[in-house]
Image (cartoon, rainbow, N blue to C red):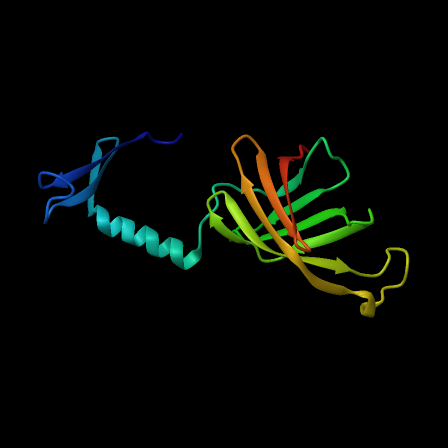
Amino acid sequence: MTPDIAFDRRITWHGSSPSEHGSRAELCFKARRGPETVICRAPLRAILNALHTAATRKGALPLDDYSGLWWDPAEPGWGLSITQSQDNHVFVAWFTYDAQAHPTWMVMPQASWKTAVALEGALYRTQGSAFDAPYDASAFSVEPAGTLHLEFASGGGATATFTVDGQTVVKALRRQPI
């Protein structure tokens, strides 16, 4: 059984207004767990500076784990496979078709979180040996192809902006239920 914990939080101003010279804000937390009460006060500026420092040092942190298969149900045959690690590193594989309608793979091995719901990175086009032939290391290649920007929405949707070989396309995506 989890004990009940009640939180009371507020921002208090010292001074007549936030813009008054010498005024300051404090963030106050009061937590009650059974008969115990803990009060924590900290200058709001110090908390905001700490949050800003952490965000700039590590980049934005995502709201959720967006791992899975993503596609447009109205356009079967292509999609994205997104893998997000516990450290929020993301690898994206895009299985699609090129301008001649040949199947092709592109990958985004080092995506960067730009906000809590958006990431972007460089796309690379890959090629290799056919699955039914002996592996030939000389057939393997990775070439820069463009960029990918993904923005996730609530409710399991996302928008993908692909720029490949100078052409930009925007697609609506859904997480594929498994």
